[in-house]
Length: 296
Image 1 (cartoon, rainbow, N blue to C red):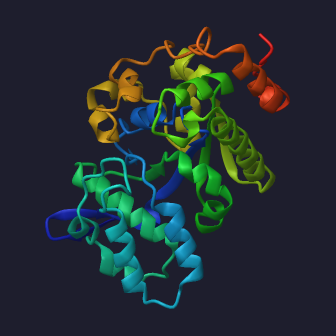
Image 2 (image 1 turned 90 degrees about the vertical axis):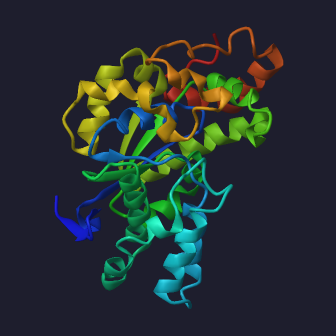
Image 3 (image 1 turned 45 degrees about the vertical axis):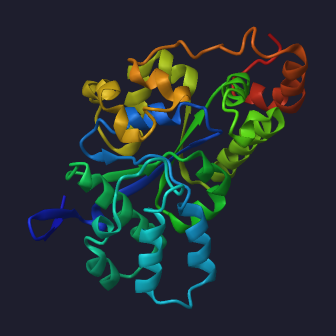
């Protein structure tokens, strides 16, 4: 991979870097998949962020400002508390390679690549060829993202909606702890998946139950989709989970363990019959299309 050199630090070339998104309803294994992929030397996925779609809208609607000003505003947004899940990158670190970036035909995709590449470099990853995002928020902006990232690949993780609803119910500070909101998130994630398929985008569907039950086979598919050979060393992810910014969050504690199936079917005995009826009524037909029988 071609690299630019700035002082004694390598700056990955944007033109040689691909972008992908891990999407879905949330509580669907996206952080687990990201942690596994981050063990690959050529792949980097930062912790979740809440910046990308909103500045994409600004990029489309407010192009009266200079490129330099927009880039600085975007870089600053990624360093503000509350805009990310425990990102540790600074504004000065994001500035590396900025002026080479401004000399190229500027796109929102390339600006975002520079952000993610620079963050990865601060963590000692200098061989990055693919950067990814795993923020569930991106799913609901799939149309916008597919416009601004026309060459991106999309990995959709789908999970039993009952498991998703139950998992969200434990997150009392999250809007989707409300069952109706959780149902909407699951339904909208499928709607966005089907939209991208209709648009002939490069999309891979992975079932959470397969990821945890058959991890080697599932990761071989994922890595092949991204253009890499299978590497068994990626399963040492639990040793480096701090990089995902979630090691101190109670609802992500299972990530500190080797991959396992302990999260399957946890909804049994936890969701009451009224909740199960609502899920069946709202999602039963759609879920059956994706191999989830909600009648049991």
